[in-house]
Amino acid sequence: MKMSCAVHALAAGAALWSCGIARAEAPAVLNAKDAVAIGTEAYIYGYPLVTMDMTRRVMTNVEKPEGTRAPMGQLVRMRTYPNAQFRDVTAPNADTLYTTAWMDVGTEPWVLSIPDADGRYFLMPMLDGWTDVFQVPGTRTTGTKPQTYVITGPNWKGQIPQGMTEYKSPTSMVWLLGRIYCSGTPEDYKAVHAMQDKVSIQPLSTWGKTYTPGPGKVDASIDMKKAVREQVNSMTAEKYFETLANLLKDNPPAAADAPMVAKLAQIGIVPGQPFNAASWSPETAKAMQQVPKLGFEQIMAHFKEAGRNVNGWVFTTDAGLYGTDYLQRAFITAIGLGANRPQDAVYPTSEADAAGKPYDGSKHYVIHFDKGQFPPVDGFWSLTMYDAAFFFVDNPLNRYTLSSRSNFNKNPDGSVDLYLQHESPGPDKENNWLPAPKGRFILMLRLYWPKEKPPSILDATWVPPAATLMP
View 1 (cartoon, rainbow, N blue to C red):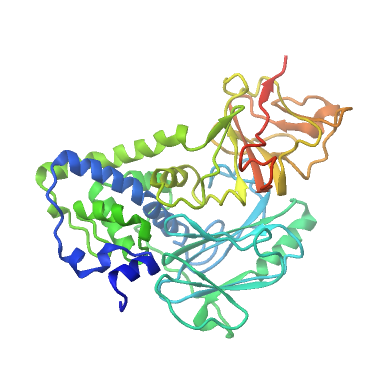
View 2 (view 1 turned 30 degrees about the horizontal axis):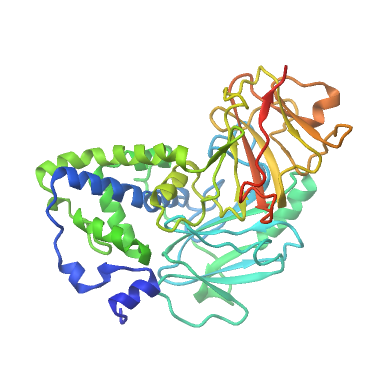
């Protein structure tokens, strides 16, 4: 590196570890209590990066694209919406088809080409290793005409081919998590598939040449059945911090993280250097074993402070970009990895009715929207029904959502009532019926591209109406 420490910290998102002085210093000697306190902070700080890497490892551990997985540098193109038997991912949606990929831009840039969307709503958010959405080309931000981007790593310098736009990732790890709106009809599936097939990624060195990616390398040691969160949570303190230290080499902290980086050094974690648990005293090493449990408990305890709770709906507009709010970032990672910026999507979720009682499908509920008071969006909105485990509910209509594309029956005054219950409310109300399971259920409202001017969910000048129990 030719830059000074200070310049590097500001320009490249690195911090004190780039100085020879920081490298030479040994970790401070801490008592066990202080070490656990700092270790818990470090656990929360690193949780998004460790979880992203574990997710990447699992999702790319295949020879060729299949289902929701594809090798590094290859695209997953989801062709249909899941049904009620789908169990791979919780809280699936029936609004957008995913086009995703994991890329390593640390060694060389990658080129993303997006075809003409012909006015169709889409977004192609790019997450760095810390889960920040560092760029999000799409209908809201860049329009629907053909567009090409070069995604570069934190230390890359070079010439960008004419006609391309550079997107610099703060980390070597990049997750492209594209979503394309689809009505779900056979005709629209066909149109979206054609667009998906024209989306492409390739290394910059292959641009202008015929490029065919090779087979992926399968690592038999990776557990492909155990949930990612369980794998992360089951790590010992030593394994967790060793993983974090290794990842920090290619996925550097931001300049604003310098105070946290100094704390990491106190427990032996220096970005770019191997983690040395031997620096811990026997007493400290024993005490540190409780850190993963303490850290995750703090992450999940953040639920009550993570967003708003209005009319039985819980939602946050603090996602996608987190700054130094490490607890919020870790919490969103734990419950909704891959979250968008709020300007692109907000996801109010409800587990209880207006009286605070958990939903029960054997009862009858209604959500009333006054005339002109549907969720204010420039994209679209949908209301999805899940069972208690956040999966779709099997029903005779094969209907999992009501949305802005639904043909609702209106009341004489122009208002609309949506019915939530297990049994049909009757033929005259079936257009407005969202079938529920017999027992517990959960609702999720999705607002894609919410309006920014009031009334807006972004400033809570519009909030979802409560689901009320019918007499």
